Amino acid sequence: MDSPQRSQWEQACHEDLASILKNKVWTEVHQNQTEHQNIIECRLVFKIKYGPTGEVQRYKARLVAKGYTQSYGIDYLETFSPVVRFQTLRLLLVLAKSKDFEIHQMDINTAFLGQDLSSDEQSIYMEQPPGISRGPQEEVVLQPHKTLYGLKQSSRVLNKALHGFFTLHGLQRDEADHCVYFNASRTLFLMVYVDEYILIRDLESVQSMKKKLNICFEMSDLGPLSYILRIAVT
Image 1 (tube, rainbow, N blue to C red):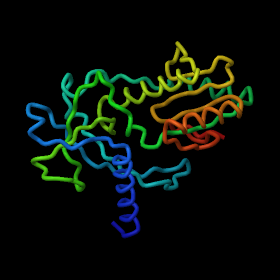
Image 2 (cartoon, rainbow, N blue to C red):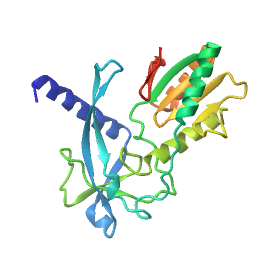
Image 3 (cartoon, helix red, strand yellow):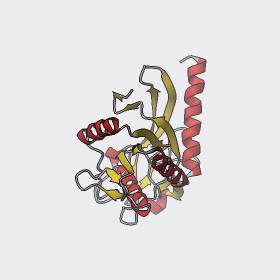
Image 4 (tube, helix red, strand yellow):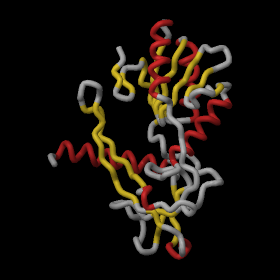
């Protein structure tokens, strides 16, 4: 690996660890406290994010729990989390174009970090991450109190947090597609695909919702929609 690329990956690792520590995702516990508990494994995953024309946008490193080492009934219960249907996405894009509505996009930075594991989730324990151990590997393990990438319940916990947020701010969930929300006056439509959000209608309503989202979540404002789920939009 050449030196400039190595530097990019190291920076990506530092940024991911900083996000984890900032969100106080876990506490350290002694191995003796986890007797008869399942210890989830973890790993670092590296990925290059490309733009619509193939250009390198950023280098990403993620600490990911090995969800396949979790045990049902011990480490997790429910896992289902909906995403917007592809047909719904296409339909609302066509509607927005025909009505000349604004179409903007946002996403959550480190979406699966910092969402509180709800009280009905099981207590979970995880091994120390490779390369950033903070104590003897055989003595110290981690107890996550917030979601991590790779945990089977992370998507569900995030979706529940978002639904609570949207409901609190006066949005209704569409009965035909539970990942579409709208306000009472129909001046805003919002579609959810995991950690990506499309906001449709008049600019004032779109900007107002952006401000509310930024208060509760670390968001990236991507401006007018240009690329979503391998669809290039012009």
